Image (cartoon, rainbow, N blue to C red; front, side):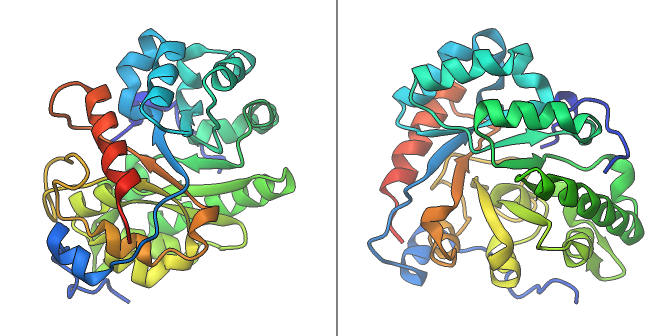
Length: 290
């Protein structure tokens, strides 16, 4: 589940996990683990889910997203929003009644921070979210920690511009070195006053880490979420929401100040068309109580 083909060339500007949670709870079990009458208020979609359609017709794709019921979309500054200028994208968003509180970025975005801030202002972004680390950043605990330092420096610049920098997990971030996962090494060195986290629930599962364990360990540090399901730990792909084993109710029930945070559907493996999957996912997530 890598996005390197969507990222500009990356620049350099920028306790061992519990195995007790090795098995996530499936739908019926999660209903028992966390039940209530709350529902998500801020449901969006990561544009990467509909990348092929967006590349061909961004305006039409945003219209389809709105028609499916979504109010938020996470854009892809990492791909220059498929070569659409910010002012043009802003018109599209307003036309379809959508907001874009965040965008995924590549590290090279931070080499041109003045331009990036101008784009964020035009599109209403509050968050720059680093989508992916380069392969060399995952070679050892030391390289993960080096990236934490780079993110802290970049996060300081973001805060000076009234923006937040956050980091999104990929499956490869959960490699283990001497009993410590790279993800933990990086997160534990991040300064939470400068850098926040975006939890991709499905990527964690594919990487072999139960996202419920991550919520128990780092819950207060997650301000944005990619809501994604997977058949199980180390699964080779994701699935429609509700068809896997991610304990979505358990995760959502642990999110503090939940109505102030953003939850983006992201799916990369589909039964049928990506748009049909997005529609099914919204129908499931908008009705999910926790």
